[in-house]
Length: 464
Figure 1 (tube, rainbow, N blue to C red):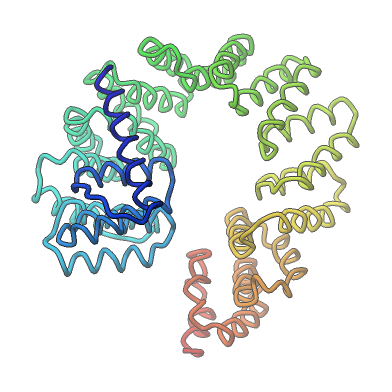
Figure 2 (cartoon, rainbow, N blue to C red; figure 1 turned 60 degrees about the vertical axis):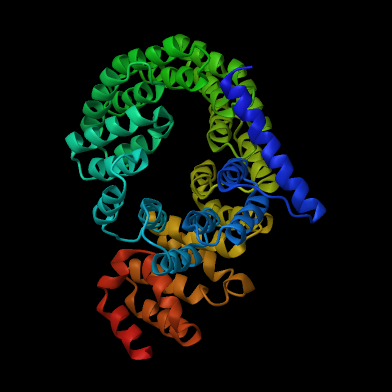
């Protein structure tokens, strides 16, 4: 048996021993390293309840070890309990000597909540405590890349990857950052250097391929993904990304080949099925296109691209009624995304669109568990896309929903202010502040522009 298999078996046995202890109500001794392995595996399995049991057990068994308290904060962050996580980190900082893990978790909390923090100051504190910790170097690399300092980002990335090649699998986080900031040239320079340093690390080649794709250098991106496949020919994502490049080059035959290989390696890959449908649609092979769109939707009924592809082909064939029926069936049976909610309106006449928006919104609302979050995301989406009139009309129809009793006035106030209807915005904001004054913080978080309205600031101060 190889080292990996033996380690995997030992981890499984440890977790089973811990679960048996909890189930039987007995007490079994685990050393701190064993508990760390157990917690890490339970978190990886997303068994949050049992992970919580393990963390609390470890804290009771090793009360002088801050590491398990930090794991408690990390678990709170994963559960989106950000206020509790911050309180826990504050408590740790006043109770225990400082550790690199404490400062790193503060940086991660700030990233997850979008709060401003001096990440360099915190991470440099961590680095002074342990200059050889690869995780600190990796986090510093991210901050340097965010600040477009590619040289320092490379220095810390190379150190981290040399110390622990597992960080290669985490490079996708850097790619998301580069794409979001449109740092395409930075991405190419960064990943080209990493592929020179670590030619056998697939994550480095993936990052390079993505950077070339964003820069519309599709031939070079294809070469990068070929390197990934030369390292591991069964990497379905490399086939999928390569197919995307061929699709952009209008080479649908090659795109089909790689989408099909990606799907063969992962039979649950509904994205590849959708893209196969797109290839056939672009080749005017509508029967095959419809077949693959339906296969994708059978695997994932909320796959918006597949639904739009299906509806588009049906409409192009003159079957507008069938296209609308497919859309209405999708919303009737499964909650759909806000993006799709507005995209499907184009399949209806202008005079029908308002009624359909209300119908689809109400249908989706009935299917979601957390209505409060649903409303909040809807308002956020509409604000980001300047769909103020639509959002106002929808929310006015749902003002009596108890899920938004304390927030509806704030939402409508925000939408009216952003729509330059100041008097109406003031009216709603006044009512909202009377009902729940502290809610103004969430109101301002809807869009930073709200803080620039003098009327908003005056009302918040007045009702204070």
